Length: 440
Image 1 (cartoon, rainbow, N blue to C red):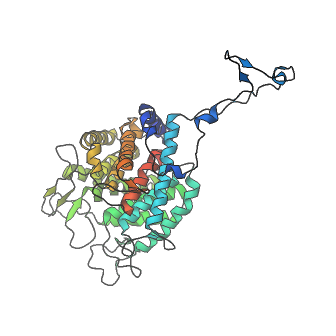
Image 2 (image 1 turned 120 degrees about the vertical axis):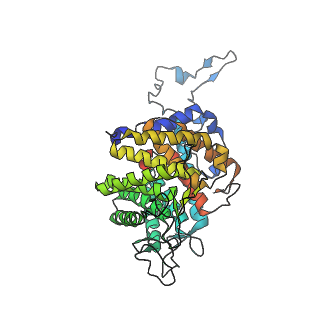
Image 3 (image 1 turned 90 degrees about the vertical axis):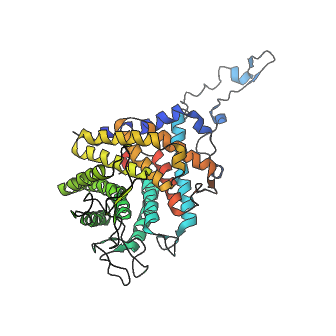
């Protein structure tokens, strides 16, 4: 039987505490922009207990007549507030870093009054989906949730600009599906619309389920189910294909690849919706999608390839987010079905990924890839009680903060400051400041 929700997440914050206690040196690192914030905790001097009287030359305390008289006031018996532990300090620092990264994201990339982010003239759905994820992550932090509800609402308003009920806009092109979903660009008449990308829609759907669970917003669930219908209709069952099955990259008629990253997140979304609705077809689809990726894209290294073409040629590049989504799909399927094989497979993938994706290798990837990988790895760790995820996530943001951060904007050696990068870093900081129970 799957773990109850209450027991499932008991290890989550313990992992964060264990990380901080195991690496106290992390507390001494420079915190970008920290000097612009008022101190959240009292400094050491604030904990010194001051006494009346002075010491004489022998080091003994001398008292005034008043302090030594029988009428002297008794010392206060009020208990002092205990000093925050290193784990508590690190937790608070990560929350503050997430908020600061979010504020910088809004300052440099948000178009006031539109609900949208800068692009040409507005961003593609892909980076928008990650700004949505970052905002939902911040809403999931218990002490910060209330203040970010309005921000989530603003993201939902902006999201509607991408919604396309049927791909019928002028000059949009030829498509294999006309079901409702979210276009890759702002939809007509405000934008050019175009193809619907299966992975981008899945990222949005995953976040909409989280929004619904935290706010009860009915339209969020409605859109999530529309996305799921679009994804399920895209399944490539043609027997003429090499390794039939899987989700294509987009609904463009010219599309010819089926990807790990278009199929595994679809399995994750399907399990989320099964958990909410009890509709067995969602669980069956998730099981089918997960099994297809394992059958067609699992490499001898224990990691997953990127995609397979129509003629069966496998693109074997190993990206971190492909491993992450299969880890997460395995954990979610284990929770939904109680089948421990899924959890064992997720753990095997995590072991192979941890061995391959060193900090240096992760630093060379798009931070969005890394954020997806770490979200799913942390989710697994919270179920199994194994702690490598938080330590790796902390090391990663520390690495970027020390080398590729200026004025609160993050970048890497290969990726300049942009919405997608800033949103990804915001997510990682927020995840380190919250419980994995809120990640899916």
